[in-house]
Image (cartoon, rainbow, N blue to C red):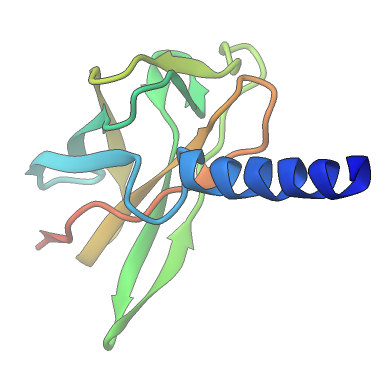
Length: 140
């Protein structure tokens, strides 16, 4: 009987963990491109909103939110750029509270149709999961 209760408790915890995962399908973060300023590099101003009821942690470099950049490849997307950070800049995870919105910018040395993805985790010491992308944007 105890073994059965343990098995049921483990199953319930697994189901709840999957449903409560801040990065499960259902988009825990809303990534919105606010503006694109053409140039070399083009400047992409964006915001990230936490849609969950728990604190999430974002990958960051100093004052900016780190991003991956995807480009349109036919009907799919492929990553064309990651992000880097100098060791002198703070790189510890950046907290984003439930319902909060944080803004940042990203430079991009390319032309075409792109989207941004944000590194996020449910705990400060957890590995980042790269979120579903922002809506697409064009750099002429």
